[in-house]
Image (cartoon, rainbow, N blue to C red; front, side):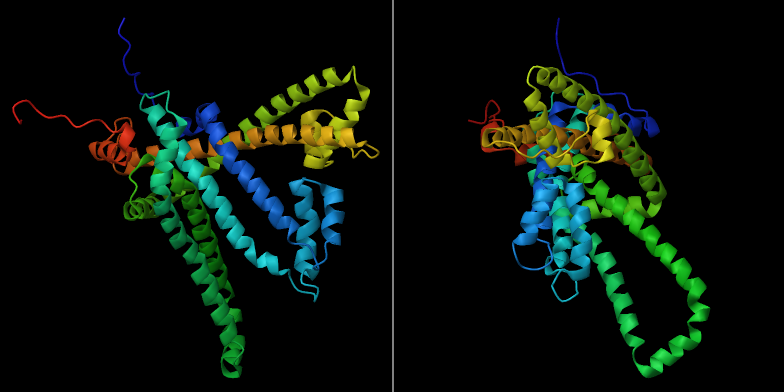
Length: 395
């Protein structure tokens, strides 16, 4: 029996492809890729929040670490309000708060890098290559990340220009003559300002959907930033509502499938841990301390695990070390759960972009184009390139 290349996947070219992203995203390779980005993002955000406390002394750091540990949600709630109110010691925001856009950009770039790889693997699997390797996706991501970042800088410049225009307009009203005119015509401008704010909100929503689509565009199509920006502009201008709807459905599917996966996985994990702890009652306190340090005493963590997570004091040095090791294991489990959700979002974005390619340009992504094949071959490492052949008779 001859075993050849598998047949391409059957796509419906509609909403069912987006819903199917829950199945396409449940892949060990894709989850492993996004797990790296989730872990890096978590550690970067945790470090940033611990650099944000009010004042310059180390005492707030020690106090908040003793209260929240590695609980990112609890740390965010305990830190952000203080940083906004009295972060610099003079009643103003903390200086590190102004670095938040940089943190968001770095986190987005890290996850976009792995999102490109996952989108590429999804495109290859849809075409019939069900054994797409991680190195194939990462090779594509390395080639195409620069173009994605270039387009993203242009998208980020749009709200900055709008914000600068609003600040400039507000500064002009401080001039007495202009301020008097503004007070006279201000009440008349309320309704136009309302519709303008709605327009700005709509544009922001579409730009956010475009930012989510950039890794998928780079992973499925060509690597040139000019073509990527052109495709994104055409999609946003002609099919903006469909792009937003695709992402809304993708986020809903990711939330539902992620909640089911986390509930089943966490219950199974803690049922196993409970069975193991039955013969070692002291280990129950160690597990509770490790879980509380990572997730806090939130209701959702208690519902997912079936345990009441409470802080435990009086642990010996050996038990404290065991709690840290257990916490590292729980951290890995949490990363896997979140990585699956991000994987579904990446796959859903890729599926949505494939549908938009078919709808707008009539491109069938089930067949690789000749330009794309040449690009991938030329970009391959020298060891993996096919050896040149000499036709007979050419000497």
